[in-house]
Image 1 (tube, rainbow, N blue to C red):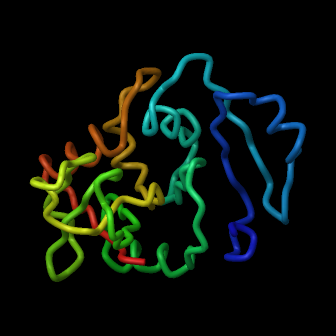
Image 2 (image 1 turned 120 degrees about the horizontal axis):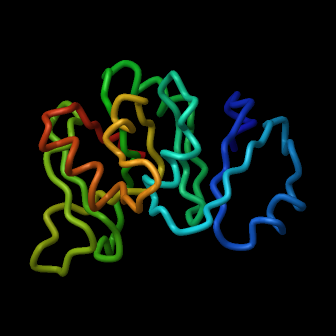
Length: 171
């Protein structure tokens, strides 16, 4: 997917069976050069990305390893750059959204509210967080180094509290 959309480099965070993954993919896969970052202790979704993105000077794409997608990654990157957000979260409507983090946006696509794994009485939308993001280095500065930190539970709500622009891209 990365190679098909013109990405030439990827940083991969690993915790479970890192050696098997490195041996399987090697230093390059499908035209994408791979650089690995192995966690000795779990750092959470945002904490592990913080470690892998320390050298990044431009906005970058995050794809969670436990999800499958066939999104148009270039369109997502273009949307993010057009909006000028600190973060863009790729959203998808789901018939049963209770197993996911819910995200509400305004008419312009700016995120107004989050709720992680609600019950039916709390569900205010069917748009869920897919685990695919575009992030700015600026927003990653808010993630503490070397400590567990989560995108959905900690970073994204913090960005909203600080008034930083977070957008939802509906796939």
